[in-house]
Image (tube, rainbow, N blue to C red; front, side, top):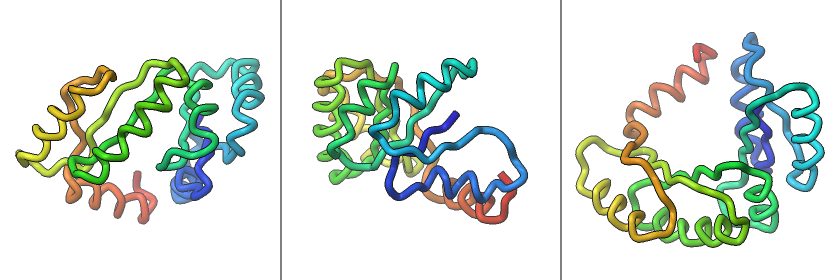
Length: 150
């Protein structure tokens, strides 16, 4: 199950683009209802609930982090994302939940990837040495989504 608490509702739009596909179930939900949604999902036998939250630190961020077993913090290898990570780390520490970083939109063999990894390594969050594809690959994936082929 994917719970979309982001006001932009991009996960819900993504699901809508996949019209004929039943899985995963995507529920647009206000962040303050996350507890009751998780309780209902557990009662229905749901074993995995992914929460999509706003891409910035907001009033609901700590509540959503506390509802999680693991917080995934995406970070692109650029100064703006790296500066924003500090707020996410503070939220995770306040919620007292484990977290991991995922580098996204990584250009192949770019020096900024190693620089970002080094900066993230100095923070009190563990993470694996892996990264998501470059923007070119993401664009092809995004185009397939628009064409309903994912």
